[in-house]
Length: 279
Image (cartoon, rainbow, N blue to C red; front, side, top):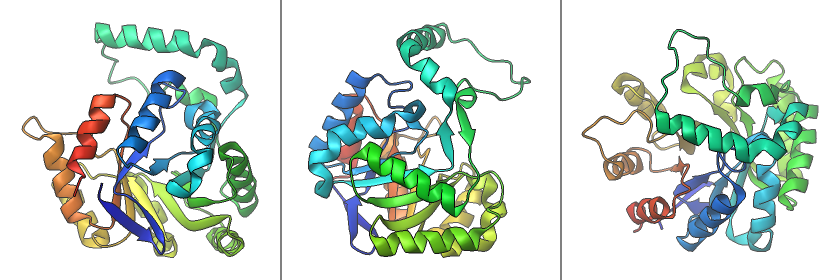
């Protein structure tokens, strides 16, 4: 498995395991097999957030990884968290998964003119990006994950500018000095990049989606090629003549200092993807 050192002393697999679907669309048995499958193929970067799994993914991963903490790199985020409605959803998740599966089988197409609103949005709230919220969220993440530090801690896709960015950065520096986080980053959608432009350079690393069109791709490449990044949604928007191996190959060559995140819960897909990243 190819390795990358995004930040000083933090060495991980170049292929990252995206955990957004754990205990959401993906049930616990499938998720557990996938995590162990990833570890077996030397994938040791795990990407989480307080909101994942309707607030349950961190604790789930913490139970699996607690005895392997020194062998894995864990990233989590703050800024979005599950609300009280998420607890009500817990007992009916299996039914929701079944209904979603049947809906997918019927290939129902949503009205493209309808407002964009997913089921998940109703069970999460955005929190104000402040130093206090950051510290409180981190402490909860550490408890959930059964660890005393995070390798990477990200602000989670804010849709407006961070008002008191200086206060947040000072608090992050204090957390690094205390050993509770090793690096501080910003996760965002490239469509929102302009909102955050003035302070992007203050973060240790950035997490963003793979640009879909060539112009945006080349612009991002010129700015971030040799800088530490975590790229997500890397297989979205593939053209008919593109295959996964080609996409991985191009991204590995173009962004040598980046982790490429995949959401992969099929054991064959994990094995296949890991093969592309073997030296």
